[in-house]
Image (cartoon, rainbow, N blue to C red; front, side, top):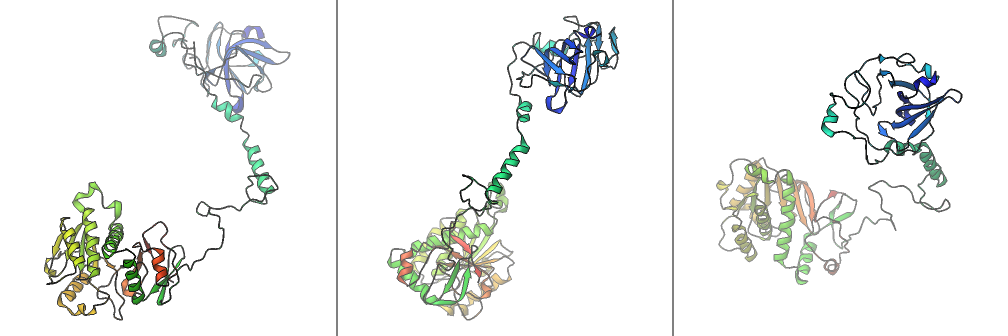
Length: 467
C-alpha cells in the first residue's frame, strides 16, 4: 500500500530540464498519481520550500534510498544530499516492496515538479552513518565530514545563485530567430534603429572606417619628377625626385630652422631604429642575451653621409650594440663630422682607420655610408675600394643610408637602402628602398613647388615598392 512508503527517503529523476530531487516521502496519492517529498533537495542543493509535489507522468526514474524499517541503496548518476551507506543493490531490514522498485508506490517513471522556480542553497553531507546498520543519529562511528565539520552542517546555509535554473530560462532558439528576422527586415544588414531606418553595410574588424570621400592615392606631386615612382603599403604614390630638387629641399629646410645638426640627429634616430629591427628587435636585444650582443660594422666617409652614419652608430651603441666604426684618417674634416665623432667616442664604441682592424669574421649587419652625392671621385681612393671589397666579401647583409644616384652600379651591393624625405631614383643594386621622415614641414615642400601630404602615417620609416 502507498501508506507503507511514507517516511521513505527516495530519489526522483525528472530529466535534464528539471533535474534530480531527493527527500522524504510525505504523501502518495494514487488517484491523482502524485507524490510529495518533505525537506527536498534539488540536484544536491537543499530547497527553501518545505515540500515539493511531483506529477507521475513526468517522472523518469524513482529510486528508494532508505525506508523506515531499513536502508536500501541504489546507484545513481546524480549526487544526493545524504550518504546512503555502503554501495549495494539490496536492502537491509524489511520493506513493503522489492528493493529499488517503484511499483508499490504506483508511480510511473516520468515526473515533473510543480514548484519550478526554486532558489537553492549549497548543502554539505549530513550525518548519516558510514556503517550499514541502523538508521539515525549519533553513534560511535562517524564520517570524516562529521569529525571535521561537526554536527548541524545543514543549518544556516547561504543561498547561492542557481546557474542551471537561470540558464534554462534562456531560449536560445527564440533569440536567434529574432535576430534573423531583424536582419531580414534590414535587407541583410544589421539593424540598430527602427525598421524603416537606412542601415550601413557590414565591415570587417580592419575595415570599420566610414569614408567621407574617395581616397586620393597620388597625394604628392613634384615639378621635376624622377624616372621612377614608388608606392607605400597602403597604396599611396611617392614619386622620386632628382638630386637637384632634393638639394633645394634640404637648403629650404635649413633656412626655415631645420639645421644640419637637427637633420643628422633625426636621420641617426630613424636609421638606428630600422637597424635595431633588422638585428632582431626585442627577440635579440634583451637583458638575458648579454652573451650574444649583435655586432655592426659601420663604414663611413669624410662627408655629410658619413656624419649621418656616425649618428646612427652612436644610437646603436647606446642600445648595447657592439659597433665598430671605420673612418680613414684625414687632415681636414667637416665640423659636423668632428662633432659626431666626439659624441660617438663617449659611447664606448670602437673606431678604426684601417680595414685590417675590422672584424675577421662576419658581423650581424654592415651599414654603408661611404658614398657622397657630389664627390664621386672618392671611389678611386684606395681606402674606399678596400672598404667596399671588405663589405662585399663579408657575409652580413648591408644597409645603405642615403645612397647617391649614379650612372654606375653601387660599389657595395645593399640589401636595404634608406632615403631621406623623398626618394631618389635608385638603381636595383640599392636593394629594397625605405623612406625616412626627417621632420621637414609641409610649407617647406611648398616653397620648392612640391605638393606634399605625409605618407608616413603612424611611422617614421616606411617601406617603398616599385610602382
